Amino acid sequence: MDVKDIIKEENLVYSKSKVLTDNIMHYCPGCTHGVVHKIIAEVIEEMGIQDKTIAVSPVGCSVLAYNYLDIDWQEAAHGRAPAIATAISRLHPEKYVFTYQGDGDLASIGTAEIMHACNRGENITVIFINNAIYGMTGGQMAPTTLEGMKTATTPYGRRVDLNGYPLKITELIAQLPGTCYVTRQSGHTPAAVRKLKKAITKAFENTGKNKGTSFIEVVSTCNSGWKMPPVKANEWMVENMFPFYPLGDMKDE
Image (tube, rainbow, N blue to C red; front, top):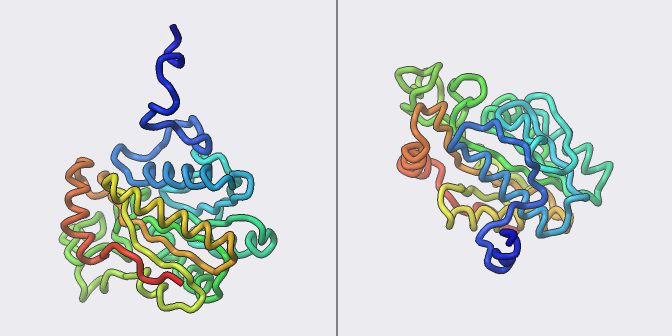
């Protein structure tokens, strides 16, 4: 008897989204990127917009995101994803356009791009992965690196007098009139995953209603860059990242 005859569809605990490809992910074990990819795929499938979605991915750990989500993709120069997304959205207003960016991309070289796109209220969704470090290039300090946090370029910890303060980019974006939905979530527990999925669903629905820019920050781990095993990285994130980057909605219009 075939296993398909034994396992009934209604009894399946988990089935892989059709939007996810069969390619093996290049992310480090324990990385939050894979969780977020899975959630995005499920939302796109459940909304029935696979053929209507266009994503933009710049340089960083997410540069190969197009290998894992079976939708239309456009690559962008480092930090320039919002500019590319602006052009796509304006040329194809019927599409669901989103950018997928890390903190080293969006909050550093791409700060001007994201601020002005959000201020204009471009009809796009921005998914912002904040792991407080440059993951792909060797673990250097990022704009979001916490005070006292050790990185490859701050081996004794980030110093405010030398390196400045960690940048709360999402709080800045929430003040801009062009944003309709701004939230900060995570994906480290089943409950957090459910909240993040709800947020991404709302953001895509906002795009469908032409409401302006939706911005979702995902506080994430980088156990490779942090030099921690995955479980310890999750614990460190809860103890250190969440107090400085508190979860929850900041704006919902």
